[in-house]
Length: 133
Image 1 (cartoon, rainbow, N blue to C red):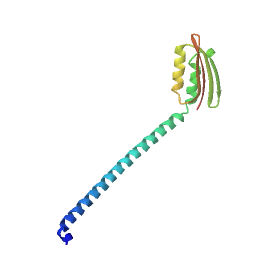
Image 2 (image 1 turned 90 degrees about the vertical axis):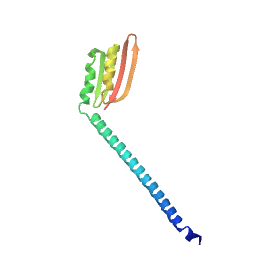
Image 3 (image 1 turned 90 degrees about the horizontal axis):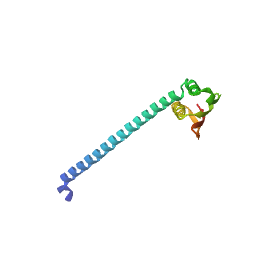
Image 4 (image 1 turned 30 degrees about the vertical axis):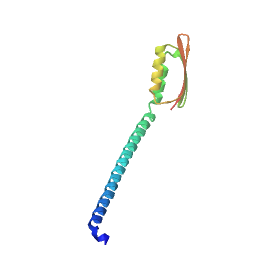
């Protein structure tokens, strides 16, 4: 007897409950799509970055760029040893300006620096450098 008296209210309550569930479901789907879109954007950014790094590391001119380090200072100050894709260089009696020039050039080349040791000896500098690519 009680059901018949509140039949319309029960139908309205169920309709509101169903609308609320539908609204929550819709919000979850929109949030999921936003997250998926953000993840796809991040993946695309990562792929572009990997491609750019492959181009930098796969550069055929790295040998020439590394060989230019030898000519930055006078040959008497450089002890150079190159084996395939590895270089060991010792720069001695460098001025501060020459040291900055060499270090800047090294840091702008796409090589793996294994050792970079700089020592100050009086007014001049000595630098030992090992790298591979």
